[in-house]
Picture 1 (cartoon, rainbow, N blue to C red):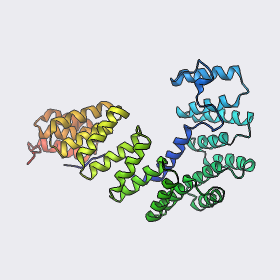
Picture 2 (picture 1 turned 180 degrees about the vertical axis):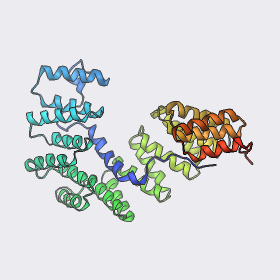
Picture 3 (picture 1 turned 60 degrees about the horizontal axis):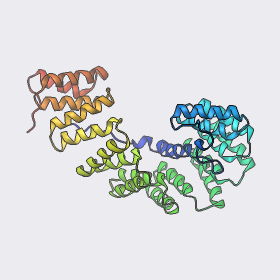
Picture 4 (picture 1 turned 90 degrees about the vertical axis):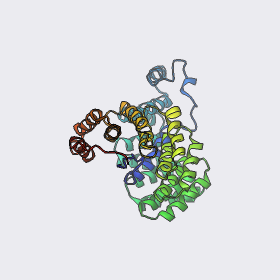
Length: 358
C-alpha cells in the first residue's frame, strides 16, 4: 500500500515558514506603551472582527488625530490579510507619531507580507536614524535580510544588536536559521538551544528545534514539539508536527491522541488530522471501514484532497465495494488525470483482479 502521508512542513519551505512564525507572532503583539485591549477604549468594540473594525472606525471618527487607533485598525486589516489598507493605516499612524518604533516595525512587517521587502528595509533604516540602538528594529532588519537570503548582511546586524544586548533569544534564533541555510546543522542546533536557554518560553526556538531533530529522525524532536505545545497548547503547527513525527516513527497510539486533540480542541475544520487517522486505520490496523469513515470526513473538509480520494477508493476496493472504489478513483482522476495510483486501481478492477489483503 502506498505511503501518502501529508507532511506538515517540507524542508524546502523551512526557512520561509520559520521566519513567518516570527512575523506572524509579532503581528499579534501590541506596542508596549499602548493599552492592552481595544474594548477598554469603547463599549462599541466587540470581539467579532467586523464589529471590532466598526468599533475602531467609531473611535477614529471621534478622535482622528489619535495614532494608536490607526495602528490598531492596521492590525485588524493585517489579520484579514488586507495588507494594502494595513499599510495605509500604519503610515497615517507614523505621520501622527513619528517617534514610535513599534509603528515602523509593524509597517515593515506589512511591507514584507505585501511582497515589498526593500520598502520594508527603507522604513526600518528611517527608524534607525531616530533610534540607532533599538534592538527590536535591528532584529527586524536582520529578519528581513534573512528573508532575502542576504546572510552576511543579517549577521552584521545581529552582531550590532548583540553589542547592545547579548541576552536576546531572537539573535541566536536568527543565527540558527542562517546556519541551517548554510547546511551547518550542528551549529544551528547549538544556536537554537542558546535561544531557548535565554528565553525559556521562546516558542519559535522550540518548534524549529523540533523540526530540525525530526529531519534527523532524532526522538528529541518529541521533547521540543511538546515544549512548544506547553507554551502554546492550541498551536496546530506544534501539535500536528508532533503527531506526524510520532506516526512516522511507529508510535501510533500516541499519534492518534495528538490528532484527536487537534480535532477536539484546536481546529476540526482541517482535513489533515482526519486523513492521517484514516491512514493509520488503513495501514497499521487494516480496519478499512474505519479508514473509509476518516477519509470521508477529510473529503468533507477538503473535497479536492486527491490522496484521500485514492485511499478511500483503495479501502473500498479491498473491502469488495468495487463501484465505490471506481467512483473514488475516477473522481481523483478528474482532479489529476495522470494520477498513477488511481489509474492502477481502475486497471486492477477492470481486469477482475482487485487488490486483496494477504
